[in-house]
Length: 207
Image (cartoon, rainbow, N blue to C red; front, side, top):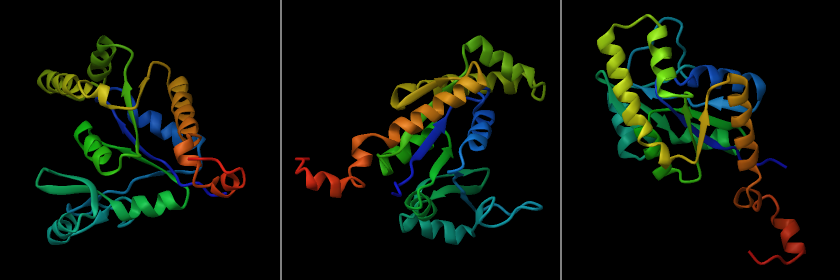
C-alpha cells in the first residue's frame, strides 16, 4: 500500500546543526529526497541540471511565478531561487518524503501554499552554545558573527509557528527525534484514511 510522502520543512539559525542532522537522516532513511530548487544563477563547475538545481533563465523563472508553479521563491544576490511544485508533487505521489531546508520566511510561504506540510525548527541547546558554535568556525570576523547572532534571534521569534521543535544537543538523539516525528505524522488519521477507505467502508465508519 503506497502512502503519499510527507513534505517536511526544516528551519533553524546558523549554528543549530541543521546540515549535519539532515545528512545523518538521509543515511538512516532510504525514502528521503531533498528538494531541488530552481535558480537563475549560472551552473558552477560539475553542477548538473536536475540534480543540483533546475537552471532556468530569468524569463523562464518569472513565467513560473506568473503561472503559480512555485511553492515559494526569493531573490538573493540578483538571482532568483524557488521551490517547484511539480517536483514536490511528483516525489510525494511516489511515496518519498521531501525535505526542504529553507529560511523561516520561506517556511511560512510553504505553509500557506501547502498547509499539510510538517514544519520542524532546529535549536541549539542554548544561546551561549549557539554563540560558541558560530565563533568556533573561525571563518568570519566579529561583525559578521554579530550579524549572524542578530539574525538568529529574529529567526527564533518564528518558533511558535512551527509544528515541532528539536533541540540539537546530541546529534544522534536529534536525528532519532526527527525520525519519530516523521513516523508519527505518517500514522495520523487524516493521512491514513485515504488508504483505509475500502476497509472503512466495510465497517461503515462515519467520517
